[in-house]
Image 1 (spheres, rainbow over the protein chains, first blue to last red):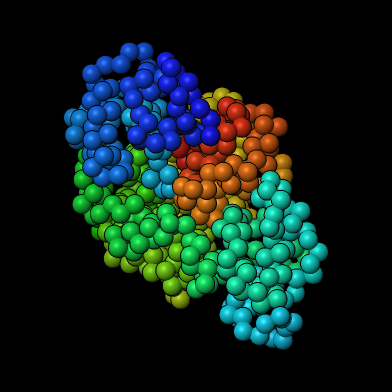
Image 2 (cartoon, rainbow over the protein chains, first blue to last red):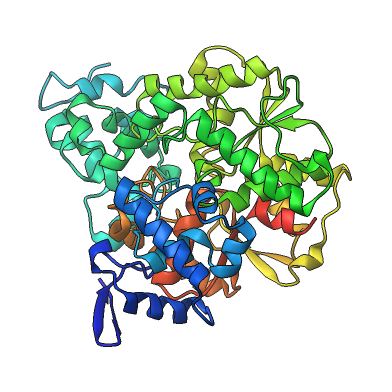
Length: 105
Length: 400
């Protein structure tokens, strides 16, 4: 499994760059993904999405449907894509340390 | 039929050799042409298709049922396309997977998905309420962009001409695909609908070779469609669903359904060719590679429809070699993509496809199956191909 070195942290990642284990997530990971996703500045709105994803994942063991993400954050779909150009799955979930969506999700 | 077997009590052998061709393993010449065409064998060195057939022939059910090869196989039929005796490996493997003693080998993700699908109608377990709330939410978003009420996504519209059956991704993480498909239907200008009763095009019963489950899942779709009184069921771009619902449906449910079945790619091409929609080739002013999904191409004979549509929305369609009947599987077929533990083997089996794409040179790949789509995206990362991957219908929508 490839590894990523960033700010003195080592992360194991899969071929799509998702970290292998949610428990290994920390704030340094967010800074790293920010660079690879081409996000200029992390705002409170980015953090709100990340926090909602993590809360939901900790409670339910899966990522929420995008509708639920939109409802809980109060952000429109289009705005979520503006915040995370790779989209809620490949962008936001990756940054929040959730596993990559698999199957027909 | 008489046969040479090491054991006489072989339930597997008894389920085979029922058809004139396809599953006639007793006729295997052990020539090994299948071995030479297996991309899993190329990458991993075995076991190989001929060994599987041989085990079945000799009645070694126990050995076969415990052999991980039955779930390494992509059920792509590339191996036996050239079989001189017309054996179809996909048939053999699906029957092997359906053996009672092979049950333990079914990947957990597939098991869970089938359970959810039978319970809720959706492989991810989305309920009718989830469906309705998602569509209502998307319609709120659409209203912000388009004032015309006809642009909204309709559901449960009795007597609509078309019923669109989405891939579960389109209600989960990838709702942008669903809104794109809705814009296509809006452009067609004919009444269409979705069904809150059934929300899912997939049929994982096909992956485990269980005809009863496959039939039950297919009937969930058929009954919802017939109750709505629609004329044509339109399938999202999904390879195995095309085989089950477009090719095998009549045989599977034992009667003719009360509607026609088309894929969204077929319908979009029809609309474009009769002039109902106009597509702009210059939306993608560069060459795009077409990858044949095995289920659509080799198994169902649909080669030209997606190519014709693709040629209307980009400057040039680039072929991979070999293609059509002899196209190489992306490595994600047969339920492998739906199993989250399969990544390593998919990257091994998919290497041949990655090599083809690299040689073809173009930087954009189109296909007509969402499983191929995800696998090709992952291959691009793994093998540093740096290609963008889209579905043909999604590209057509961009070209409206």
